Amino acid sequence: MALSVDIRKELGSFRLDVRFEAEQGTPLALLGASGCGKSVTLRCIAGILKPDEGRITLDGTVLYDSAARIDLPPQRRRVGYLFQQYALFPNMTVRQNIAAAVPNRQERSVQTAELLRRFRLDEVASQRPWQLSGGQQQRCALARILASAPRAILLDEPFSALDGYLQDQLEVELAQTLEQFSGPVVWVSHDRGEVFRNCPQVCVMDRGTSQPVTSLEALFRSPGTEAAARLSGCQTCVRAVPDRDNVFLPEWGLTLFCGRSVPPETRNVGIRAQHVHPAAPGEKNAFTCVVVRQIRDEAADMILLRPEGSTPQAPLLRMELSDHRQITENRITVAVAPEDLLLLR
Image (cartoon, rainbow, N blue to C red; front, side):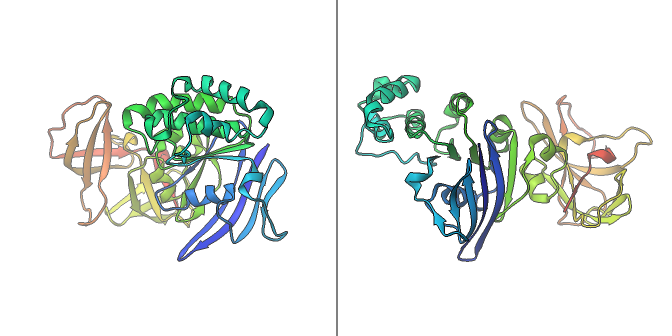
């Protein structure tokens, strides 16, 4: 079973152009900044919003096809959609919210009771949504989705409405629920940590356009674009000019060796903080930086550096130190291994 999406949609000056396929048993993340079209994509899949053109299929069933003039209504798509604010019926109790989604009337009471038990909602079954905690509201919304026997599940930033202390617990519960679901799952997020913990496959979205689906390992190792690099946690991206197996960084006044032929379409170089280290004598790609600031943190300290010769508006370089030692020098010579330079379009 797979969900295949290939759609275009214009909303004013915004243009959506999305292509991806989500397989069963492997949650796929749509990872992108706010306003890049992630939620619009989910609404098109669910049938709430109609694309201008393209095609959406689920397990061989055509949900939308502009050429064939097919556009199934939401209730016939069997797609479960967890909204950011859960969209529970405020005038119904928890039990009624779940029961309303069960398609088989003869099994409604039995299935509702089972879902109340499974999601630990028995004690609040007679309460209304406004009487529930954020975690209980999310569990009720998930139970209602599963009550409808969906063939795919769409999650729109499922923890955005929750306080931080609740998120860890509910993330584990949601992951356990999804492990028991056999269909495709599309998980919208702008939180890379959330994605890294839950979604083996990632589709990066940038200003309405999707990039090819990739694995988490490939996204980290070779993100391909500046947008993907930043979304994967790379905070330093600097303008680059290709020169055979080198790149010239005009904002830093540096030339770095890449150890491989640099594609001519390279426009930026990304450098992850954990790949910057104090240089050993004679090491390649060593250069001197002014120490701007040391930021203390529990896991690792972050050192902000300005390469000597930088232009006033040049981005700072970041170096991660896990040993928490104090940097007392005003200047430090650092290095980056050629294989750790991210060549970005």
